[in-house]
Image (tube, rainbow over all chains, first blue to last red; front, side, top):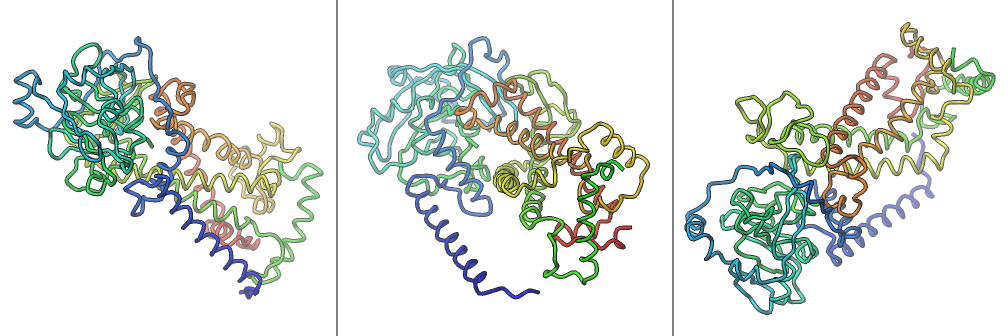
Length: 252
Length: 268
C-alpha cells in the first residue's frame, strides 16, 4: 500500500468538510424554501427530496396538459372503493342536498359550504387525464370550483404551509403543500363529462389534482384544513391510511 | 484480425505491449506503473450504475405487476383493449388477468425505490458522461478507431465470435469495434431513452414539458416504450455478464474493481 501524503490527507479533509457543510447548507435552504417533503426521512428520503425539490424549483406554476373534447375517454375507469359508510348513504338518499364542505384551520374566516354554494363560485372546466400509479389512465372533463377561490374567500393566514383534506370515510385523508392547493387546476370537482360527478368517480365532491397521481385525488371530500404543519397527516407515514407507504408527493 | 489490421492500430498495440510487459514483471500493487485498465471514475460510476439498475429492475417489475397490460396512445385501462398483455397474475383485483388470485401490493416501496435509484442513475450518468468528455474517455476508449469504422471490421469481429475463437491479446487492453458500438449505444441511446420515456410518465414533469410525452404519442405509448427500452437494457446486461464470465470472470472483475490489468497467463 502506498502511504497517503500529507497533502492528499489535507485535501481530502478539506473536500470532506466542504461536502458536509455544503449538504448542511442545502438542507437548511431546502427547509426554508419548502423543498423538503414531509416523508424525507428514511432510506428513500434523498430520492424523494430530490424529486420534490426539483418539481418545486422548476415546475411550481406549470399547468397539466388539457385535451380536446374528442379525447374524452368513452369508458372511464374507476378502481373499487371501500364500502360507503352510513353517513354517506344518508346524504345520498337526500340527493346530497345536505352535503357540506368545511374550511378551517389557519384561515381568517372558517366557512361551510353546500354544493349549491360551491356552484356559486367561478366555475372551471378542464379536460385532463387521471393517471393511476398502477399505470392505467383515462381522460375526462372535470367541472368544479377551483380550490384557490374557496381558500381566497376564507383568507389564508401568513403562517399557513399545507392543506389537509378529508373524505367522509374517516380513514381517508391526505395533504398537499400550498403550491398545489392554490394551483389554478386544483379543483373541487362536482361534475364530470357534462353530468353530476358519479359516486364511483368520487361524487358528489372530489378534490382533483391533475399534476399528481390519482391516489392524491381523494373522493367524497367534506373538509379542508389549512395548517402550518402536516405532522400526523402524512398518509405515507401512517399505517392506518390506505395510502400508507406511498410517496406523499405524487407529481414524481 | 479486425482490430489489429490497420497500421494505426499496430502502433498503438506495440506501445501498449511494452507497457504491458513491464507490468507483468512486477507483482500487482497499487504502485504499479502505467494507467489502470479502467480509470477510477469509470470503476466507481460502473458499480453505482450496477446497483441503481438492479434496483430499478426489481422495483420496475413490481410496479409492472400492478397492471401487466400495455397500450398505445394517450390513455388505456382495464376497460380498453390492450396492445398486449404479460401473462402473469396482477397485484390488483381490478385487472383482468385470467388468474384466480391477486399478488401482494408492493408498489409503495417499489415506487420510492424506483425514483431514488433513477436519481442515482441519472446523477452518476451525468458525472460519467461529463468526465468522459473531459478526459476524452469516449474518444480514446469507445469511439471505434478510424480503421474499424467499416462493415468489414464489424463482420470480422462477429465472425470471430461465431467461431468462438478465444480473444486475442489486444482484447484484454482495449475493446473491439462490436463492444465499442454496443457500449456507445447503451450510454448514448438506450439510457437516455429509458430516462426520457420514464420522465414522460411523470404528471408533474409532463405539465412543465408537454412535448416530452406528446412527441412519443401519448402517456401509454411512453409507458410501452419504457418497457421495451428496459427489456433492451436487460438483454445488454445478460450479454455483458455472459461475456464477462466467458472471458474470465475473476480477471474482468478485478479489472473493474481494482483497475489492475490481468496477467496474460490468467486470460487463457
